[in-house]
Length: 184
Image (tube, rainbow, N blue to C red; front, side, top):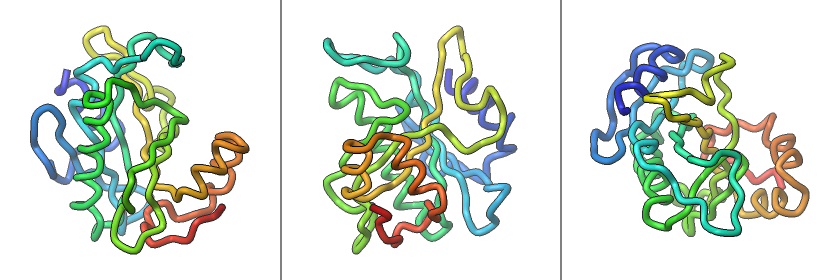
């Protein structure tokens, strides 16, 4: 399944710059950002090998949630965010739950020292192509989640006013700036 996921990313993003963390069960790859030369895209490969658990009483857009993560990063933040992606990718396995589009998660600590961003919001990825965000490998659906660091105030806003309200606010924000101010 890993090779199918990697082939999918290659079809849309080209060849990876490098594999940052090559591990089992999840690896993190770095890709050039075609729109921003000072930024890169980071993706997980391997998170989707294990079906995530939808606990009784919870609802999911899909019956068999399998996901991979994508994140935009400034080059100086790549190592730190690669570690965060590994932690996020392992979260469903260690907590018996699932992550999917429009979920949010409190991290408990800022994404880097002195940052206001201590939560993550999962949205549809900003990559062109009708089939990028959802694809099939070995007959299994895999969804790509765009992992966006957000502040606790932005997370509260999403919970109080909804996903669209948060997405409208962060639309004009440089999401690769881990030192950015909160927009909520």
